[in-house]
Image (cartoon, rainbow over all chains, first blue to last red; front, side, top):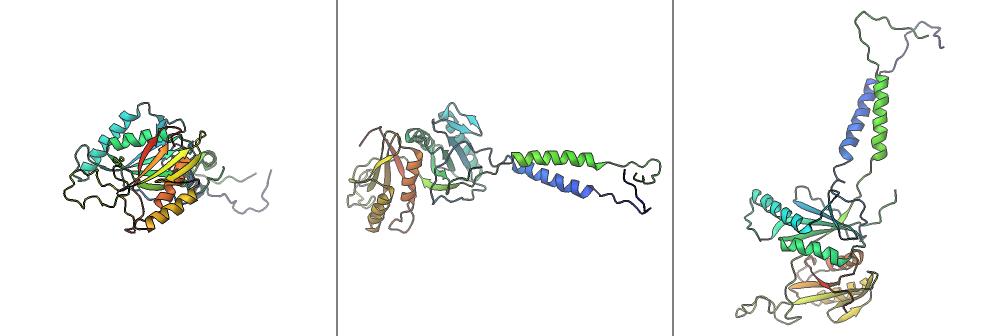
Length: 155
Length: 167
């Protein structure tokens, strides 16, 4: 039991500012934790090439396709059973987006959207080519092949 | 014993210690589960479907002969071939008829080809169906670093799949 010999006022820390700061940090982590990784399948091991540079793609219409080593297509963590139908739907959606931005595009024309391909380094070309060919059939011509520019550090 | 502050009747004091403790628990949870997204680079390519190769390395440029109504005729095409071993690794590369065994050799050959001023209407990469994406990207990396006679970097490639074991 602590006893104060003096009769001066006891000091009680004001917890309000520290609580406010903690809530700020919590809010930060809650907002940062999900957004960017939602569209990426982080199980994929991307190839490493030195010339791969990050590019700012803010505002561009992107179609992100994750292809694992078995050639399976994953989008937002979900396995896509019918790749052709999915790409056809995305192509139609890209056409609508392009027209809403004022582009005079007919069905069958080249689409301005970019297909972002994230494939595992051991994916055989035949599986990758199936996806690329399907995208080309539906008007996609611009592709971004994702790679790391250095080996990811082990966590 | 700590002196209690004299309170007026009706004053409500909020004890923030419990709330702060809970907030720290949440913060610890989010810090431990936070996994920063890796910074990924990319190679931008324009990949049209491959056009028929009907006239390899002919001297005529497409579009110069007005009597030629067939756009497929006269297409100057650079063909790069990548053959894989059964494990999916790169076994052999060829530029036209010239074969080489490594990616640096491909780099030297392509630099020599483009420096000679030869213009190509399309660059086709024929790839063994077993070749792994990792090795394919090494080839694409070399191709996209080449400079065309116009000064632009090569960014338009077409891919053709070769059956396993071809070449």
